[in-house]
Length: 230
Image (cartoon, rainbow, N blue to C red):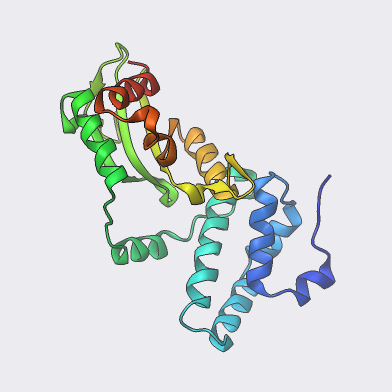
């Protein structure tokens, strides 16, 4: 069933609430075309700018609403190309990435070290790769037609018969609170979009990685080989 935001609701809801509602509809591929037109227009952007100007929480509200608009712009570009909405968040995205501090974790370092051992060369995978539209991938690996790992090809290279894997490291907050096997909406959407970009997506769950059944480097190495089908 298609859910719609009624005109009177659209006028009375905050800009943040409208963007959140639109993202929720996108999770179910149910955002109607007339709502896309209403949100991606000069009038609505001006409305958001006015809300930011008068908001009571200058420390958090602007960043929150702008980040959600970026997510919505990305989702509409990928899921509704027929709407012809341009990607206008590249400058915002690059500014956010420049401010972001690289964080390390024992989980990430452990996976990285074992990938290095499995692939025999750290040139065969890249870390913290940023895709078009700003998705971050923990590790990217390319294989040639003979299933051998290769360095990342140039963007202009024809990728026929080259397989690219995206490894995503999942923490507890990546899953629904009432079902620790179900990905939350943003994670599910990210996986779907990466697949649309041509990646084979692999998830590594931190909880599974650290269980007593995965208590040795040998077992974890076999697990990585299984995931990578090598």
